[in-house]
Image (tube, rainbow, N blue to C red):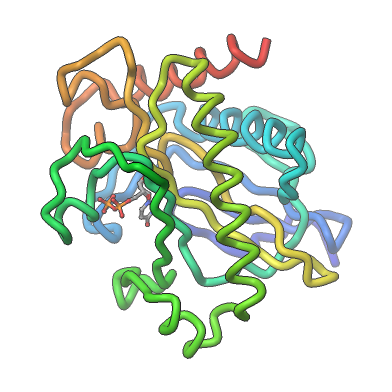
Length: 242
Ligand code: UDP
């Protein structure tokens, strides 16, 4: 396969082929979308920040034996990754109530859970990424029962690792979305990104609900200072990894 061909362009990233058919290059864009792409904008420097944050978090998870698609970060906004077939499931892990969970259940924002909540959404823009039950997911054959159990176990382990790492950065990991893929040997590996675009992160030094937000809710809710908040997340992560 020839290299540098655009394979796919998503809302926040572009995928290119490389000389090695099993390796792809992801370019992280500054484009931001919310509410199923009804709201669009640009967060200056976001591509570089999210790529660097994701790379650091993937390296951290690999150190704890979580398989990820991460290979290398050859430039601040570029990531070399293993080619995988992405499962059309958004896996959401929540430690504290926020966002759609509050809208759908009436739980008050900020309610701290006794155990993490793992949820699955169907990755399908035209259906607006609906929440799935376990049985819907299996009936739709989006994953096998064994894969689903593996996904849940990995998601909970990832949550433990990230929660305690962010705590060390004085950041509360409220919730996050991850995606998994199957590699050439059908091994399940963590893919996509982990960044302030896909996590809710609250600054532990702030108590006021808007001031503590360090993630895409600043863009979704027009709170402002989006770039500065993303930069602050990056700075604290880089300080922590040393
Ligand atoms: N999330 C994401 N992509 C999506 C939907 C959600 O990265 O398409 C992340 C979101 O940033 C948050 C978590 O998943 O960290 C839970 O999001 P929620 O279901 O509360 O949706 P929202 O309120 O953002 O619509």
